[in-house]
Image: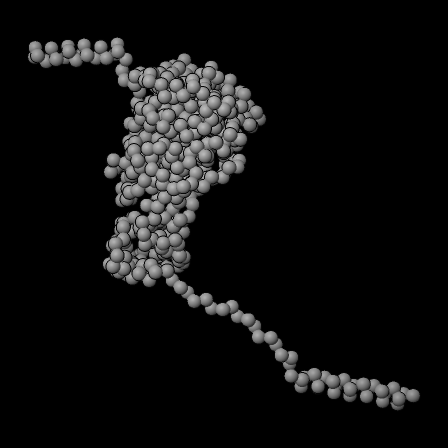
Length: 479
């Protein structure tokens, strides 16, 4: 039987050899061809090739275009300065706003069309030796951008849209910060304030105050008139008109801040954030006559405002100023200290050609040309923005679009009212308790009344001044 076992084993081995040989000789099964992605043709925008030519014309042909993308009406490119260029002893260390002007001139030559200086924007990025160059072929900042409302609660920590950049991208920033705003009449400063108020009045746990002595009704009419005789609370927690009441709001804010800062850390949760706007701030802040008592000492409005800007932020109290120029004395004697604590400054078109350099530190930046166009100066590099326009309700103002008006947004805020927490309301004092909280005949008379408080020296002070001047003239005559 052993021979039979060996015979079967030999047959099996032979069969395995035959099968293995057949498998090795069999052609491999057909493989489905790999589908390669279609090569998309690179269609560059009209300005990309002229931009490369312009860079060569101004001596920046060695700049590396590491990325680019089309944008509405233009192109945005990321440029990198090669190390060999940076290391040249005669090379300028980095690019500046003047290089943007040279590129604009070269682009005009290459394209054969007029290129405005502010159509070319050059910004330093955080990466070493890298810049972002934005070029548009039309006057983008001349456009009107309708304000788009979001009628839903937002948290105070959520960044909000403060405007749109040259490339059409929205620029966001937090609202809970001290700030200043400078702009001449018709520059778009009021539109900026309305956009701020629209964002603030939909913020949970935030009370909005507005105070001033000049044109206050012009600012707040659209926010309060829709509530006339409705009995509904206003979207603005406190509207203070006149020098006396403006000073009272500042004193109340300091009282609130001091009370909050005296509370144990474990009990500070739940405080209502407060933002106060001082429109045409130069009028109340340059007044040295009307004073408010805080901690037993009489203070001017400028002194009170500076104290708020310097020390009330930790108590969730923020102050925002708007004036027609960017000089510190427009914010009173303490204006320099106030500006030093501003989280951002919005610079619209003003009558002072030095405002841009003074407020941004860059005297080569071009001043805004159009209404609603402004430079936002903060901790980062200045940014050129266009504020979205919330249509005015003033019939004397032109209708720039068919979108929302201030009154439309104000009326939608009837479901978003927010007042002070009980402890802060008590700390604010009796002036806060007596404020107007409904839009009725009494408040309209308060805002539009003919009784105007004097903002200059008192009669007794003026009489003393006149007597002193008369004595001075007599003395000079004797001499």
